[in-house]
Length: 388
Image 1 (spheres, rainbow, N blue to C red):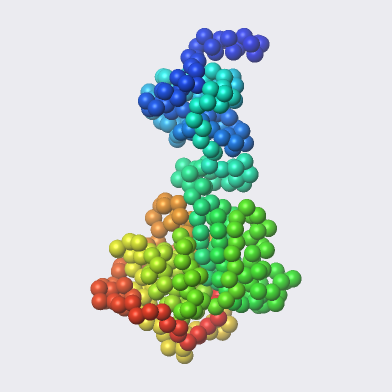
Image 2: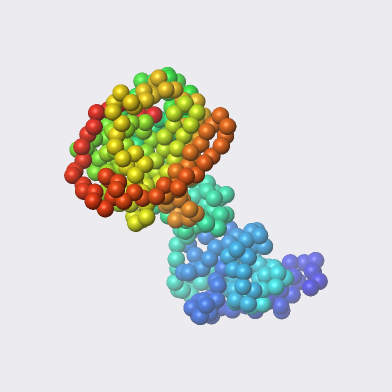
């Protein structure tokens, strides 16, 4: 196809080459299996789209169309605002080998005038810009990002593990984060608890964390609970969440959290650090094959055997590594993608930078989830260490 020097001439040639159909015909063909593709820019689609249409900006058409529709025999109907860009888009698809392409006369403007059904874009223009790189992932896309925005994750502890986990979950667009911690910011926290600053020493960690998270992403909701997790409040604090992240270094609280997440059917993302080593796993009571925390540690250690956080010490970056792994697992669970660490224990050694994945099967004799296990209610154990 020779390209005329004037736009009108080019459009004339395209109209001779590309079938143009009315919005009503496009709607009817869509009902019969055609793909209706809205090629307007993200900010244009944010105000609404034809019902059932897929969105893909004209500028990304050649890069992304095969991911969206690889079958070159399927009918594809293209729509823009007025019907011009869709002609150019249709010609591009023809050059790429798509056999059945058409353009909607009058575009989205006429679609609305004709009173045809409208859907709404899943994301606002701000969200499309903020999460642009994430939206390009096939496993996320608009539907996945909307799922993240509707999700709710509870973080127990906003210290060394909770800091990186919360930051990246907020940045990823998790709609509601619930922060549970009764501690205040201390100067000795700052080398690893990156949510907090020197100016906030003495402030409640939950307040400090909320300020940092909303500064990063003001579109999310951050609920804070400046209280210690106990038998009397555990259900109320974590019920209704999609995932719970364990950011403590406190054996009694971990056993309480393990029991509550199992009773409420909420996946628990476990993480632990000490000195130069760390562990991560996922305990998902929704799965029959998932172990629980007590399959790994059947009973709490005696207080004299539990490591003291301040005495054991930890390399500052190590909680960052483990917290990021926990955030990754939480996002996978919400998006329902990949292989969560359910039934596996991931161990890391920062000195050698080696990661080892060990199979962690469900224990039929486990006191928490075994065949004969019985739930006798929640109970508070003696606290042996402050939260990490």
